[in-house]
Length: 215
Image (tube, rainbow, N blue to C red; front, side, top):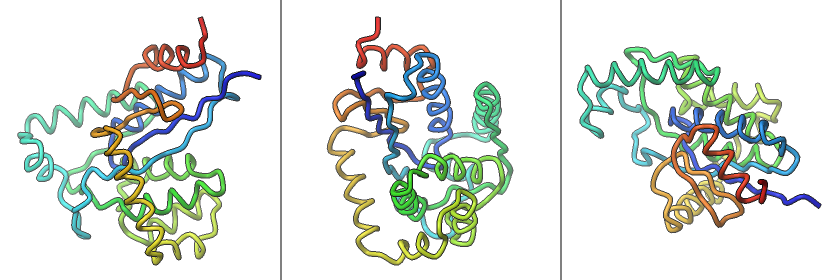
């Protein structure tokens, strides 16, 4: 039997590096030909757990949190657009774009996992936020994305009223923090070996090959 790899991707749906890292990881898996040996699970990480319901303008958020200037912010957006093109993903930044609270999105991603649609929903949320100018903290938007991947909207949205679903996401975030995860994306294989950042394809290939003992 070939070795099996459980790959946990710790990420947030408003993290541009997370979709870039995922696309590079997927390409690495494909080039190694180990698709049948890999199981991917997305793990919650909130970059801004205290973000209020109304969100915060992205430029203002970047200036407040990272000290970004208008010039550096513009350069970053341009760089991310190019990096997105390189992995066939469209970043469409706009002046009124907001950083929003993502806790509800993570609760729904946990729900989608039960139906093997977690990756489908994660990718849908990346596109909704970065490409389609959607507020993914809005429950109507979340319901639309749930429907788009084929999940039962009423059953999924009822999770947002569940205290246990809320606590489950918080507990998972705390566990990963305790394991030393402090930035996203972080990719962890079999709960033992991790690599952080949107690594290039070759780095991910080396990382996976070492775990599978591929020469």
